[in-house]
Image (tube, rainbow, N blue to C red; front, side, top):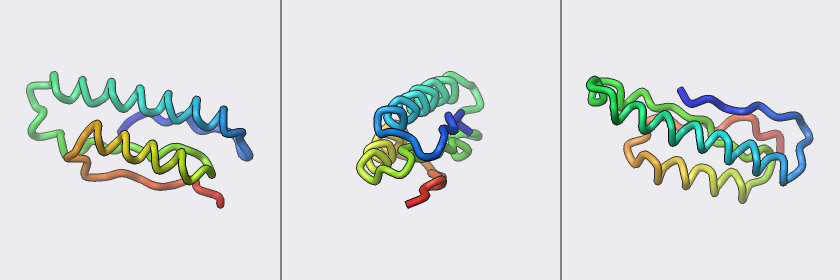
Length: 84
């Protein structure tokens, strides 16, 4: 599972964007670590990330698109923490 920065509510768009960028950076690092692991075929289906973006639908969509682009074989993408 990818690390996720849990931010306060309510959060400004700028704060949510920064946190989403940090979560995406961690997802990229996780993807590289999985690819470099000799057990990659066995663990590929365990790549799990949260869709970040707080209560901003456009930011959440952008983050989800980036996560899917990062790993087209993503088997689990959690959409949580949306308060609106």
